[in-house]
Length: 271
Ligand SMILES: Nc1ncnc2c1ncn2[C@@H]1O[C@H](COP(=O)(O)OP(=O)(O)OP(=O)(O)O)[C@@H](O)[C@H]1O
Ligand SMILES: [Mg+2]
Image (cartoon, rainbow, N blue to C red):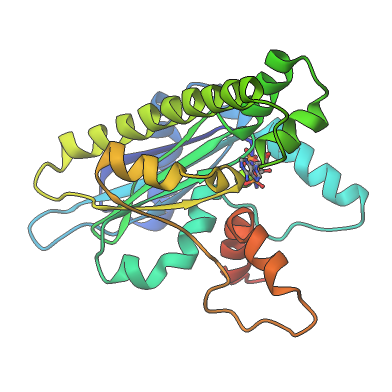
């Protein structure tokens, strides 16, 4: 599921019975959600962070606008498909990292799509901060189109590595790329700073990139230099058995864009 508003908050609640908790969350949630509570689907998960010394537990609260979700569901129904699970991009992606999460590693998942960047900081065995930023690779295409006064298709082709006609064109595209990537990095920095101010003693040192935007040449090195964190591009098929019918080069090429779909596919569904 992509492209809808998601708000994720952690709220502390004393441990309660499940039914009591559900009712309490609905009334508590209102203060955290900048929309009418009746316009959003709400879900939550008890992260069970209560200890022997504290009866408080953290709750992960997720809200998504009903009209956005319903539009996706209607689209699926209209082509004869029934959705059995709706998930948040960042959490679907997380499914591919269960081993690392359970072993207590700290890292940050960054999925750069066409119109949004999902940032998910994982530490202490759970998602600490998940945030969508309304920026993405489509903006680059739009800016190239405007700057060079060309069709969108041609701009997209130039963005993904198509042959540039001259030095001036090359320079203009490079400038647009650097500007956008710099803005993305600023947003990523904000999330990391937020984490660091809450957990100063427990640093994150690894970034895992996915999404079509992560294929921008040199972006991983740029992030590595700017944030001083080991940066890698995720391949969701690294451990998958691949049928001989599937072209390996094609699979490697689309792997970053497939990260969320692959994560969602890992999620068990109880019908
Ligand atoms: N080599 C590349 N360099 C830059 N951008 C690229 C490259 N290859 C693909 N993209 C861009 O990646 C985007 C598609 O990526 P992805 O499939 O992850 O997005 P999406 O999931 O459709 O969008 P969103 O997550 O924002 O809803 C497109 O904007 C495409 O132009
Ligand atoms: Mg996406």
